Image 1 (cartoon, rainbow, N blue to C red):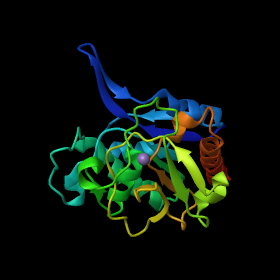
Image 2: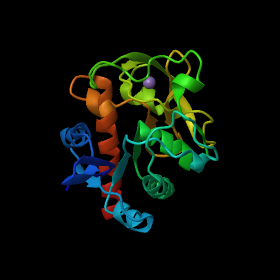
Image 3: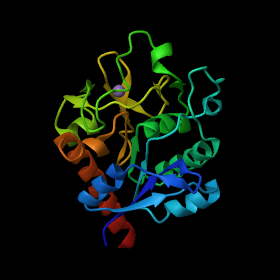
Image 4: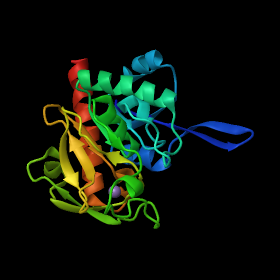
Amino acid sequence: MKPVIGITSSYAKISEFSEGVYIHHDYHRAIEASGGIPLILPLVHPDLFLETLDLCDGVIFSGGEDVAPQFYGEEPHQNLEMVSFDRDRMEIAGIQKVISQDKPLLAICRGIQVLNVALGGTLFQDLPSQYPGALQHRQKIPRPLATHSVKVNGDSKLAYIIGQREIRVNSLHHQAINQVAPSLTVVGRSPDGVVEAVEDPSKGFLIGVQWHPESMFPWDPNAKALFQEFVRRSAERKNLMTI
Ligand code: MN
């Protein structure tokens, strides 16, 4: 059986009659194309979420709402956008469990932010107003297209996986990592110095990226390499567990 990849979801209200779980289809398409079984994880009580994670061989913490600043000891900035305390609480508990089990974890956009907060770091609540000289990180071009460059540390796992030290990525965020959590290493930054990629080199596969590789997947070999390695590591772990 293929590895099961859990993907956390957002809340969306489409109409008076239609509201609930939302995930951009690029996430599950990229997992499907990489040989995994995508399993979309709804918002549930944190205890149940921890049980749900037992079904997964690897987990994607996906994009979505801003992380509530109370989780890193700050008051809300006036440009803070929609937050979900319940999602934050659930995902912070989940990240700690996934890491303690050394299960492959890929954190994307909001995912890299909540990963950093779960491990004791802080965020910029709003780059345009809190980070002088910030590039345009909320691109005005279609989601799959790359907009800014990222320099990747040559000795990182990410560089090893993609085989590149300078890449171009899309950018759909207004928050970013501020103080980096003690257990994470910054392995990629945009030219303005904003953190765009982190990893924990002591883990099998623990990588966070601030861009959206799932949406670049159809055309970008770097995004493909990242997803394929993530699914491969998840498959490996699944096989280890069933021996
Ligand atoms: Mn960016």
